[in-house]
Image (cartoon, rainbow, N blue to C red):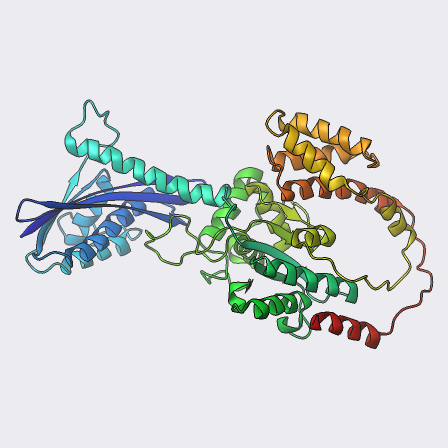
Length: 495
């Protein structure tokens, strides 16, 4: 007959309501040999460290039930070591050893703990022992030293899920986020078709949310048509290239604002203060919009309550970049999916592309000459006069590469401002500050996305100049008929 020991511990981030737990299991077999295994897990929406201590113990006992199936002998006794006196008290209350009833906050976990013990048979005995935490190793008993190791495992689990949430590593990711116009005009449709096709041909997978209601269904959208064409050519299923992000009730774990989606909202609150969160945000449409933005950036989360399989808490890699064509911006009190996407992306350092031409450069796909449906207004002509000189991409790339290891963001922004002006960029009152903000978002990076972010800051700085220009009524223009335009777009789809 075999006996087992489990040591469990937890680590908790109160501000984010995020937790990690860890444990170690040793089974001492009757022949004098032993089998050991360690485990880690993560949990969002963790409002009490005591409940996470219980989850850590439950995770260990679940794993023990799997390990015993590999044994030729039964496990008749388990000693569970924990630094949580509350865990011991709640367990004894549930068994009636202590007079007071189990606290309803922990009742579910305590009942599950007892239920698992029954799986080992009527002769099984569970002992729960209190162990001191954080005892210096030179003073600690052998079990206290082991508990110190488990304590580090729990902290490591918390750090892993927090790092993935706030500093995701996306170098090997094939995912990207996109908020797109639901009913684009013919010119934009052609560009979106080419973009969807080009990114899909690169093997990238889109997480898409449409800004507005699509008149004829998503299957008619040009961006989706482009992805579909590429998927068919490459003989891969559409689900490998596309995930349309849904918005649902906040009570829906996968499609509402639950779990790790709420953790990102709490990060927003931590940065902006309580004034940045609208009352009841977790249970209304604003919270659901935040959930959409979270899933655009990270995909679906692992729905398991006891999650020891992936310490990111997500089913997929985070998005490599975001394409936001909803004309949104960073907001102190975000409401729309686009505003939440802009805020979250800013917090976690995900590059955001807001210009369709920049996005096309990412795809490396050129499109046929666009249809000119109207003569530009005076304001649009002013905007065009501020357009970036040719070859600027290479100039910025070369500057970032040369100075990325030498200059701090503040120094880099000054160098970039100097180089841009020398290469024909028109100065404006906000150009310097926009470049500085971009440098802070991409410190010591010279990737194509970092370059595009700098170029995007140039466009953003000049945007106010175009807006401030007086507008004149559009002059009559020779328009192609709707039938001809649609035929032109249909011909592009067949290419």
